[in-house]
Length: 264
Image 1 (tube, rainbow, N blue to C red):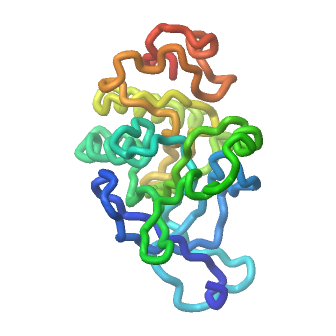
Image 2 (cartoon, rainbow, N blue to C red):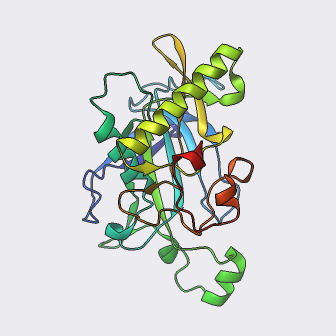
């Protein structure tokens, strides 16, 4: 949208997440990039601050849109069959929202607006945007060497309500304690109520947000999250997360079942 000096992104509105045809998308507009992808391989994660209100006039150079939400657009590790995909971040965020929506205790948790797997048109066909379609026709042996043996990835896009700043932006010890306290409260609620284990709590996945004029903490990035209730061997023998913040059991990939203590 060069005439308005901004970009438009279409986010799938996948209410059911059941693999059915999804023609519904919602339009959002942005001018500010939080993080961008600088390579063609990997998760290719991009995040933008955006709004759902279409601008009506061109902005001056350097003038940002008044953003109220944030979008995460990435190629995430997944299973080709949606119903078998236990690490679907969109589905996990929707479950958190459904379970905690009526909470009256003031828990800060990520609130998803819309999201799903991205599709595109090829002639008369609607095709899911995955690494399989992206690298169609490429020699498998060559692809494995170039990508480092990357697993199947699917293009997911979702919008969250809250806009935050990195953890290092806290200005006082009190703010730091408040932010960490909020994150741990959210973590325990997600484990106890939603039966979801985050598995990758680090300084990069904690945001400082403003809520009713107060500094609060928000836990984000559920790429590695798993359903504890559906996985009796949750995390056993697998290493996941960010190395400096991993528990000992996680680092050595032990056969001990992962619990909330590993995240703590």
